Image (cartoon, rainbow, N blue to C red; front, top):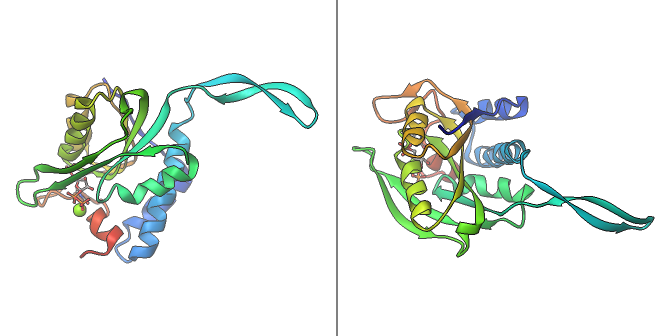
Length: 209
Ligand SMILES: O=P(O)(O)OC[C@H]1O[C@H](OP(=O)(O)OP(=O)(O)O)[C@H](O)[C@@H]1O
Ligand SMILES: O=c1cc[nH]c(=O)[nH]1
Ligand SMILES: [Mg+2]
């Protein structure tokens, strides 16, 4: 069974409260989403493997550490996932970026894929799928399917707000995928939105409401 981890760092929790507030405007919302993404990536990369390397300082030769594992790629689920990309790249500037376009039918809540463009070597990379919202889990499951179909082997899912239904759906369909969230909320409401949530993440990021 995959791991589900809520990142309880006080800065993450404080910033999440700011963007839940309905009076937080587009500019601030966008800035804070990136800040939270950056903090989350800092937390979840604690287990990246290191190896010894020789380095010559101005004082002489020494053996120190550098990252040893697979290269990384960040995969935003469009649109709202785009809001987290800059935050991730702030810490991992060399990461490649793949895009998966997905929208949820407002009535059926079924996801529809409309765009996929990925680095050619995703099978060699550790992939971080980013999307602020994990509601029914339909979009995340379809994005994971799209990556696996193209050879991806190491995928983690990073979301800001998760609903229990979405966590269960991803864990059931993809027991190999670890999920990280800034919060686990109460439920999905009758319109398919997470409660208490933060509303429509894409609309709040891009000012489209
Ligand atoms: O878990 P689910 O029930 O699939 O819902 C979550 C999805 O819904 C939102 O995207 P939306 O369809 O609103 O597209 P957008 O990012 O373009 O606004 C959100 O960003 C997720 O991708
Ligand atoms: O609460 C939700 C659920 C799906 N998508 C969003 O943007 N918000
Ligand atoms: Mg949306």
